[in-house]
Amino acid sequence: MGLLTVQGVVAGYSAADEILKGVDFTVDRGEMVAVIGPNGAGKSTLLKTIAGLLKPSRGSVTLKDAPIHGHPPREICRLGLAYVPQEHNVFPTMTVRENLEMGGYVDTKNVKSRIERVFERFPMLAQKRRLAARGLSGGERQILAMAMALMVEPTVMLLDEPSAGLSPIAAERLFESVVAINREGVSIAMVEQNAREALAIAGRAYILVDGRNHRTGDAKALAADPDIRRIFLGG
Ligand SMILES: Nc1ncnc2c1ncn2[C@@H]1O[C@H](COP(=O)(O)OP(=O)(O)O)[C@@H](O)[C@H]1O
Ligand SMILES: [Mg+2]
Image 1 (cartoon, rainbow, N blue to C red):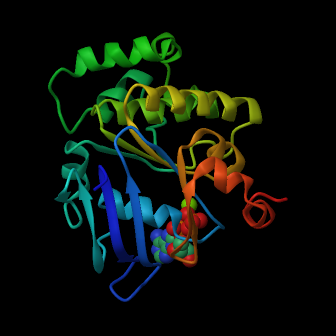
Image 2: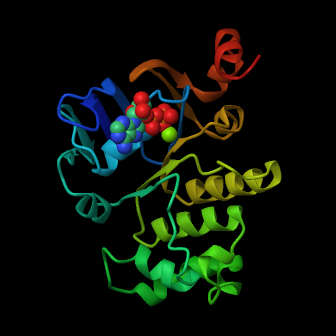
């Protein structure tokens, strides 16, 4: 059994809506797993279902062997699963420091020392702690969003397209931070449009197509597969 296990999940945005048509997905301890696939395949829907924002009509989601599907997002977060949505993932008018406080809201103990740890890890955030989040660059904002997620000291982090909208250099830096967080022991599931980069840094990957598992395996092997290169990586 994986650390996080999704089995046969059917889910959508209303009771009869089947966007995910029976998805299986696993993240083992320490892994970085990439999720790629065409627009509208259900990648974000999968992350939202794991995070508890959507309830599956069938199937199960387990974290450390305990079922979490149907649990409220806040409780799932408290159990050690942090979710960073693609958009609206920081509070623009609040300062960097206030955003980090919000990130720690599910567990209000030791917020100060956790913020200090985040500042040690990301000196840029310490420097800009009094700046409103809307004053950060796109890449800095994504770092802040991940740092907010780290405030709960998660075992698993879900990232939805962290590099979206970033310049190639900013995306590269962002991926370096993702790798560093993973090396420190946080298991990661990352949805990415930037499939080449994602496969280059992930251990395993899932390709979703039309709400179903299409291919799964070692990320480097998938990246080297001629069919996958042609269809998903642009040749
Ligand atoms: N809030 C929503 N309400 C209704 N349908 C949605 C909503 N968000 C996404 N969808 C639909 O779910 C399908 C999968 O979307 P999504 O999971 O966002 O795809 P991906 O992240 O792979 O691009 C799409 O057909 C999309 O139109
Ligand atoms: Mg998406």
